[in-house]
Each structure stands twice: as C-alpha cells, then as structure tokens.
Image (cartoon, rainbow, N blue to C red; front, side, top):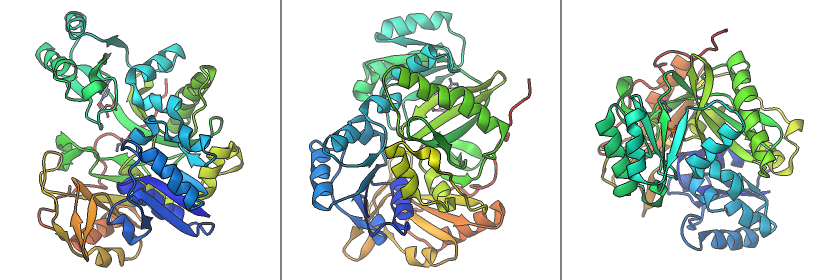
Length: 432
Ligand code: AMP
Ligand code: GLY
C-alpha cells in the first residue's frame, strides 16, 4: 500500500520512516517533507497549511492512489484536512476539524473539561484586556495567562506578579503577538507539581496508550534557559503498566473522549495529554491533537507492532482488536540545533556526517530542519535533527545517541549534553 505523511519536521520523519518499514507498504511520501526526509522516503512540495494546499494534497493522493494519509502538525488538522480528505473518499489518520479544536482553542478545551468534571486548573475566559486586568486584583500569583488559539507552543505565560500578568495580557490582546489566537485569553490557576505526557492512539472508543517519553523543553543543560519545542527525549519514562498511567486513562483520557462524544464529536487519531501531577492527583494542562515532537522520535523506534495496522484500526474503529508491542530497550533522542535557537538563528550551513551517524548500529537520524542544496544537505530550521539510539540501558542509548551526534558537523551545531539523564522527580501516584 501507499502512504502519505503530511508535515515537514522530525516527528513527520519518524512517522514516515516507521510506516515505510511496514511489510505492507510499497511506497511512502511526505508532503512537503524536507531535504533530510528525502534521504528515506519520497517528498512532494505541497504544504497543507498554505491556501489551497489541502485541495492540492487531495488531488495528489488521488493521482498516486494513496491508501492512507497521516497528518503530523496541528495546524493542518485545525484547518479540517481530515474532513476534506474523508469527503473526497480518502482514508486519513487524525482528528476531524471539530475534534482538533481541543488544541485549536484552549477555551473550548477547558469548557469541555469543566462540563464533564475532568480535573484541570480553575480558569476564567476574557475577551477584553481591561476585564482580564481587573480580574488580577483577585488572583494569587504566580498565575498562568494563555492565548486561546494556536501559538506554536509559545502562547502560555507564567506571570510571577501583577506587573508580568498585565504585560502578558497586553502582549496577547493588544500587541497581538500571536495574531487572532489572542482574541480571547484564559487566566488559570498555577498548579505546582511534576509534569508528564501520555500520548494515546484512539478510534474514538478504544484507547491505546503509547509507551511513555520524557521531553526536555528548556534550551540549556539542567533545564535552564528559554523554552524550546523540545531539545531531546527518552523512552520509556513512566512504566506503561503503572497505576499512574491507568489513573490518567481512567480519570482523564477516557472521560474526555466520552465527554466529546456526548457533544457529538468522535475523536480519532493521536491524542497528547499534557498532565500535571498535583497533590490532589493528575490534572490536565493541555491537549495536543497530534504526536509530540521530539517524543515521537524516541517512541516510534521502540514500536515493534506495525504502525500501519494501528493507524488503520483508528480510522476503521477496530482498535480494540490490536495491541502494541515495544522493544524493551530504552531509546534516547538528542536534538542538534542551530546556534541561537530558540531565538533567531542562521540557515544554510552545510551538514556533514549524516551517513556516518546513520551507519551506527541501532541509530537513526531524523531530520527536522534540513534542506537540500545541489548535492549538499544544509540547515533550514532551529531544530535541525534528532539523533535517536536504542541501547541495552538508557545510559547505553544515551552514549550511542551522543556518539551519533558527534559524527555530524555543521557550523554552530548546539545541543544539550544531559539528554537521557532524568531531571527532577520521577512521577508516581501518591496513594491517598
Ligand atoms: P501548555 O501549552 O498549556 O501545556 O503550557 C506550556 C507549559 O506551561 C506547560 O508544559 C507547563 O510547564 C506550564 N503550565 C501550563 N499551565 C500551567 C498551570 N496551570 N500551572 C503550572 N504550569 C502550567
Ligand atoms: N514536545 C512537546 C510537543 O510536542 O508539544
């Protein structure tokens, strides 16, 4: 069968690579993909996030007789790519436009959670800056200010005091730094605790949690510096068969899917639950309607079940018939980034050593921001690549991932040096 993956980052490379390894798959495309992804699968320069892009993708999928399309990024999902593909009679993995609102609007997400009594931080919604600022008089600090819409992971500001909170409200609603995403905002209670992520596949009924992964969001070692999209990951993080994961599925993920269903929305695809483990138990920080990045680069190399089977089952509603099997060996993924990321960074630096890194045993280099220029591979993004390795222990996986990264050179390559070393408290469920 023929597969089309939509998107252009490291997550999409990991998805396309994993799907292409299925014995059922004869051809894999990635649209638009990137120069590094084209080392493994075919790429076609159509971007679903551009005007008319989805229609072009539908024409491409029909022309190439694509059997299954898999959507990577939230923006394409929020644009309703799934509804449009399905209306054209094409099979596609991901939530439809109504379900994608869970990430597309934080107000929608919070209202679903509160209507269905799912634990989440207390909140208020504002559509005027003055009303939001007036509310600060009765707020305790720190407090959390969130732009309603998509903001490329940057729409959340934790304000230490009233001054910072006022500045955040102005940035979002007056300066419109996130555009229309700041037409409304949420002020929510700050939840202290330990964060963890649970990514599941679902057909709307059955929930199949993927093995867990830890993300490293801050740019610098020791979790210092500004937040990034993620500088590395390891898997597994928390045991999949633990009481904690079961509690999160029972009290959060299942009730959310049930709540959506009661409101006429069937959620199919990957569901990323960002959880804060508080003294009172797990509470939802956010939902993403897609796989995590870089978590997916650490998780998928450990999946030994055919990903095509699991994704088709999500589309067809028979996920209950499937299980996911995991390579017991841990994985570590280290991101190689451009100098300056997450602020501004140069592009176009020539990359050497990709083949040498990939040639190491149990190593795979995923391409996040690599373009092709003639015969050269060059940098084209902040996060350039993710070197993932499997090892007998997490320590061994970590050594191999760093060995792989050491084979790769480009001017200004930066990375954290503590990926794979657990930071902070390992989440466990405190017994009441
Ligand atoms: P979000 O995109 O909503 O997950 O927010 C990004 C990050 O902000 C999270 O990963 C948390 O570290 C932090 N955060 C968000 N909401 C809260 C909250 N209510 N209390 C404490 N931290 C939060
Ligand atoms: N690594 C965080 C995310 O994918 O949202």
